[in-house]
Image 1: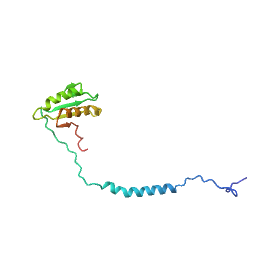
Image 2: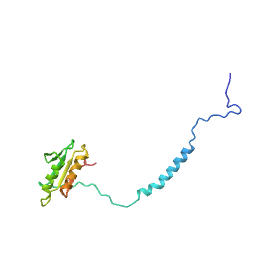
Image 3: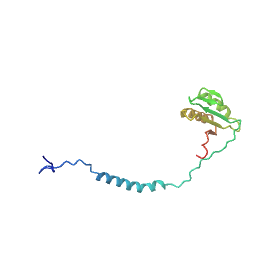
Image 4: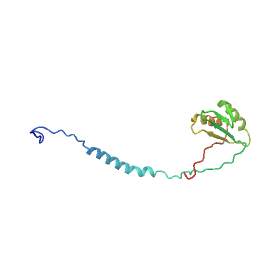
Length: 142
């Protein structure tokens, strides 16, 4: 019966374990760096951030409601507007009224931003001063 007690004379034993000392050193250095830099990041410039508020707007009959559906089509109330140029022409006609009506944009939450961007571009080109977005109010208590 043979028994292997250890390496023979002159043979080096192969170490098959991982040396974790460099890993621990790097982790401690990173921890120290993060502990030093976090207070600098959180206390930069003192500002008062705005609070969320839900303003109840009074709907006036002269206000213009533009809607964007899921396909990106633009509607003036219920009337389909085929092109951006047609929208600009219609907005230019109402932009000269005194007082100028507000434009309210109702965009589908799943629609691409392109449709809403075209409405904002048309309002800018027509000279509309007040543009607002109609959103769904947040759930109560959340």
